[in-house]
Amino acid sequence: MSRSVLLEEQILSLLRKMRTPIPQSQIAKMLNIDSRLVSRALARLARSGKIRRNYVTLNGKRLLVVYPVKTVEEYADIPYIPCLLCPNLNKCGIGQEFDPTKCEKLTHWLIHNSERGS
Amino acid sequence: MPENVIKLVQMLFGETHAKVVKVMLEDSNRELRDEEIARRLGMRINDVRRVLYQLHNNQIVSYRKVMDPNTRWYTYFWKLNVNNIYALIRRRKRRVLEILKQRLEYERANTFFKCTSGKGCPVVTFDVAMEHYFRCPVCGAPLEQFDNSKIIRFLEKEIAKLEEELSENV
Image (tube, rainbow over all chains, first blue to last red; front, side, top):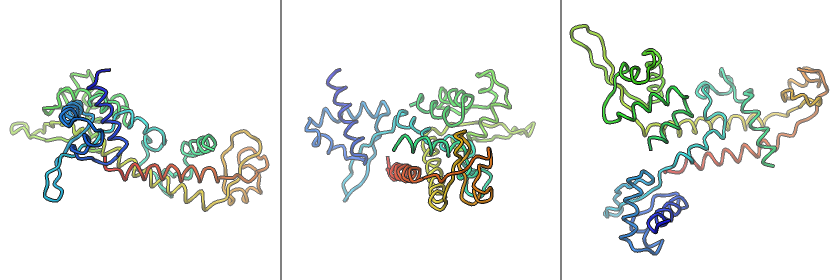
C-alpha cells in the first residue's frame, strides 16, 4: 500500500472516530503530519466522494470543515430492523391498518435477536 | 457514488426501480423523458411511469411538465435528486424509531403468555389468555407466563442506537 493511500485511510478512520466535522487545519495537527500532504490527501478523498468539505464562518474566520460521507457498507446495515425496508412503514402504528404490536415480522425479529443478544 | 445509489434504491424499492435510476444516473446532467427511459430499458412505458411516480412520492426524482401548444398534451421531463435518497433513509429511520417506541410501551404495559406445546404458536397477552381460560387459542395446550424482559432490554438498546444515529449530523 502506497504512502498516500495509507494517509487517506488514516484520515478517514480519524474522521469516522470523531463523528463530528473537523476543520481541515486541525487534521494535520492531530495526525502530526505535514499539512500540505494532508490537504492533497483530502482533495483526493473529496474527489472520490469519501468525504465532503464545506466552508463555515466561526468567530469571523472562514474555516474549511471536513466530514466523512457514509459508505454503502454503512448504509447497507439498514435491513437489520425489518421495518426499515417494510413497504407498509408509513401505514404502521398502534390502531392503524398495520400494527407494530401484531406484526409477525417485527415479533420474530425481536424474539430471535433478544434471545441471541442475551 | 452511483453504485451506492443504485444499491440503496434496490434495497428500498426493488430491482425495476434500480434499473430506472441507473439509466437516469448515466444521463444525470440532463432531464429524461419517460418514453426515452422505457425505450432504453425495453420496458413498457406504463411500468416506467409507475416506477417514476413511486420515486417521485419519495422525492427521489422530480419532473417538469411542458405542454405541446398544438396537441395540448403534456410531456414530462424527469430529473434524479440523488441526495434525497440519504434523506429518505433518515426519514424512514425516524419513523422506525416511533414504531419501536410504541412497541416498547406495549411490551412494558402487558403481561404475556406463551404456549407450552412448542409448536411455535404466537405469544398472547393476559387478556387473551384469560378469555381462553389460559389455554392456547391456536392448539389448546396450556399457557405459561412469558418473560419479555429480554425483549424490553433489546428494544431499549435498539432505540438508543437509532437515536444516536439520528442525532449525528454527518
